[in-house]
Amino acid sequence: MTVHRVMGIETEYGISVPGKPHVNSMLASSQVVNAYPTRINTGGRTRWDYDEEQPLRDARGYDMTRAEADPSQLTDEDLGLANVILTNGARLYVDHAHPEYSTPEVTNPFDAMLWDAAGERVMRRATELASATPGGYQLQLYKNNTDNKGASYGTHENYLMSRTTPFSSIVRGLTPFFVTRQIMTGSGRVGLGQDGSSAGFQLSSRADFFEVEVGLETTIKRPIINTRDEPHADPEKYRRLHVIVGDANMSQVATYLKMGTTALVLALLEAGQLPEDWVPRDPVAELHAVSHNWQLDHLITLADGRKLTAIQLQWDYHDAAAKFVDDRWGSDVDEQTRDVLERWSDVLDRLENNPTSLADTLDWVAKKKLLDGYRSRDSLDWSSPRLQLVDLQYSDIRADKGLAHRLEQRGSLARLVDDKRIAAAEQSPPRDTRAWFRGNCIARFADSIAAASWDSVIFDLPDHKALQRVPTIDPLRGTAEHVGDLLDRVGTAEELVRVLTAN
Amino acid sequence: MPTHERPHSSKSKSASSGAADDQETEEVESATRNEELDADVDALLDEIDDVLEENAEEFVRGFVQKGGE
Image (tube, rainbow over all chains, first blue to last red; front, side):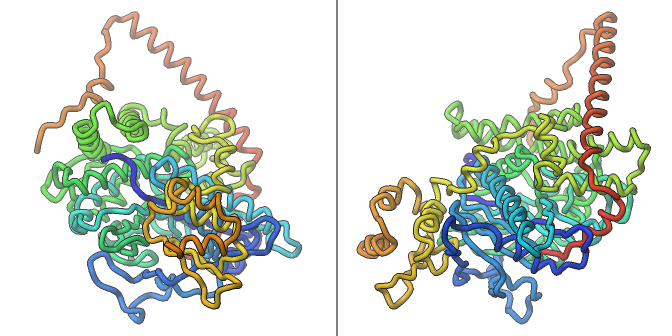
């Protein structure tokens, strides 16, 4: 019962060529991904292995047929789109019409935040290189979730969970948490409704795009609880909870809290320790209502008729987690779990008493402070294009133009990691998951690797006719502790494969 | 429903001492703090003015995305 578990974040970035709104976004995205130097000094680029992908596997226990699926759900079809693996163990690719970065597997919220920030750095460098290519588009990337004209693209969290936890209890336990966590994790949005056409400000950039409670889809009829069941690990033991209801966060603290508080709630669920049922009578309507209520006083109606604010419900989750951690660990609790619980409580306390004091912590509060400044100085109303521009440019990933980054530079938005640490995470994988093996293989033997994925690295060796597939089905093997010595010892890919297959 | 103890909410809503001069000091302090906040926001907006894209309406209209995920 801690914040520690295998997890990761996938982020699709908004992409545009200013002055050219009709540019083919798949081509533009490919240009970004192809520009990133995946290995210095060689042309070696390692492609993705789709063998283990099962995008139509449903956690409720059945598969959707390919004929039933919307074409956008067939994510395992290699359309020749750019798709590479990086030395830090991450995946960089084109998904539909956006460049996307998936962090390597990490074991805690702090590392999820760090390798997510590394992804932003990857995208920044790739965009600079792509734009500098002769004849290339002048590209700009945004770490956001909507164009405010009806389109949305996702920021997905993944958490490895015990297979023994019934999916129905996950749905019941998580739905109220997801309906309410946006008061901390929302990135803020100017405009209400999917196309943003109603004037106003809301907490979450994603909430209005969710239409059903549970489902397999991510691109249409988006569900609060997504049932995609593709563990990339032993399916007998694990499921991968695929969370699609979150916002892309610029604030490092918001990302850290999003992953940390969710991990704690999952631990509560797995232990069967959620004290009661808080499911709202109409979860989808409440998700929208909470997002539209930056005053934070909306009363959510639960299925049993009780009425609670989002803050009160978050306190209930916090208190249950704090009690469980205290019962289980007392003063022996690990540092990160203690830190997440303290920050969670501090944020809820401030949301109750002095929300504006969170302008250096939470994205929606930081963004709203800027917007309120413009509204009052220049007498703008919520439909003003200038306010929409502030909303958009907040997520611009350039260090000099992105407003969140400007806030960070002047000390107005708190950071948990500095540029030096992020730069190191751009190159190196986390030491405590299989990403260590994958990333180091790419760094050292890219020329001998035919393909790789979360669950395998496939070598193409001159002295073997067949490709040599090294499975990495356990996310917690292939760590620095596990294979560090071996990787130090071998000089070539041939040697590595020989040792691995000898056992 | 079990009764939840909420040490945090009692902490956050700590009762004031009630002395009139205390209250006055608090008000003056909070006015100063508000002025400082205003000055901070002004400086912030001046800085942001310099980096905001030209022609907000056209720029925002030109940001068109396809759905994803």
